[in-house]
Length: 467
Image (cartoon, rainbow, N blue to C red):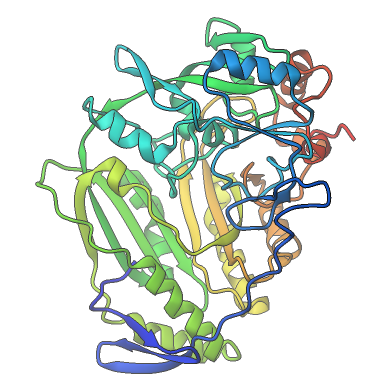
């Protein structure tokens, strides 16, 4: 996130030198050991499945990879329950783990047709592959999330989103879909055909069946200018609303224990392409972790060192097609809690989160991500009923994250937050029903399409209050 001229990290196994603007800081680079891994094969000879961060595991009795819709329908009718679809494993909640059948749609991928400017896309298509495929036709998705490794179906199921006050989450651009139920029935639905199923299926946590195909609105494939800069956290707070109003996409990262924030804007442009340059995020995180390791005992010293480190950082710019710039590589694994708050409470909640981290958790070094998302009307969309502001707290995959439930989630809940379906949270049953006006309507559609609960693993049963 900062210029190569702004910071360099070098060193051996025990310590490193962080250099900024001629000043040097010796920081510890020793790291925690890898978390203990479960056996790769269990006593029954079943292979281990793990999510991206390693926090969710399972030993499915069957792994299914249908090649087409007919094969998918047959598999769903005959597979051992619980049946759980899986994409890239980027959800931190236990949506995918199952002792029954794990269904991958990787073989059901690609654009299979067009209806005007709407693309008909197989649901197993990864977002990172969909961008260039649309661009080949001069089209693009209106927005993309921070990471583009997810499958389209998985992104829709969890209400995955990008940022932009006038831009909806990905499911907001879905105009129709084909759903295969656990009984093998194929249902075409949209706003006029089976509209209640459509409103339930756009964000369904994979609990209604498996989405096979999606009809998706697209936009013209335009170049955008990406700009990244560092500023005081107070300035980021004071300018946030104006920036959400004035930029196509805007987000910022509050960096705990630094007093600083990183702003990122994207705007359409006709300027010629300007290369983005090599990734700087990993070096930035390494520097923050090193400061944590050396100066975690003293917040004032840690902040002073961080400000000196970043004092010479120059803004970075890039110009390219949106699908190349809106998403970012994230090689450093983490666990995450994200809630979506009423916009009038977002920044206050953020300040409370940062203050709590700095008071209670000196081990945290990941920045806190802050975004804005437009409203939509899908029944289980966190953005249903009004725009929302998201605040996401990350912890390194080797670090403890239990404090998120004890210290951070109460702040989000006090401010009326709804949890991201794929991120860590403890809400279920009545607590969720109170946040979603169409909660009971969704449960009725779920019971209609899957009366035997074949799509429900223990986590989903608890989430829906069915245990």
